[in-house]
Amino acid sequence: MAAKKPAAKKRKPNASFMKPVTPSSALAEIVGAKPIPRTEVTSKLWAYIKKHGLQDSKDRKKINADDRLQAVFGGKKSVNMFEMTKLVSKHLS
Image (cartoon, rainbow, N blue to C red):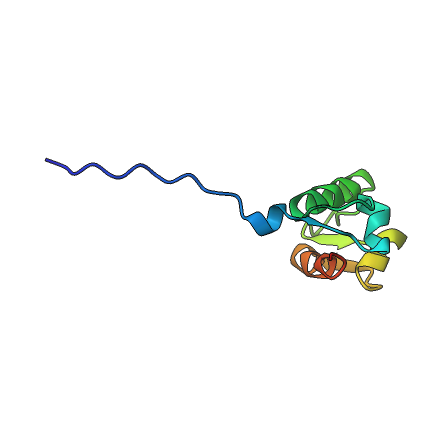
C-alpha cells in the first residue's frame, strides 16, 4: 500500500511585501504620493512603462527611461528589469 502524501500547505503572502511604503518625490510622480505596498508600486511602474512604450523593442528586458523615470533610475537612460527593482527600492521608505 502506498502512503498518502500530506496536503500541500497554502503559501502565505510575505508580510513585508504587503506593508505600505512611502515613495520618494521622484517616484511619486509615477505611482502617486500615498503609501502603498511594494507589489502595488511594481504594478503601477509597469503600467506606466507599458502605457508610454518604454520597454525596448529589441531587448524586452531593458527599460528605456523617459525624463520621469531617469530621476528614479539615477540619471540612467536605460536599465534592465533586475537593475530597475534595485534602483526603485532606494526610492521607498
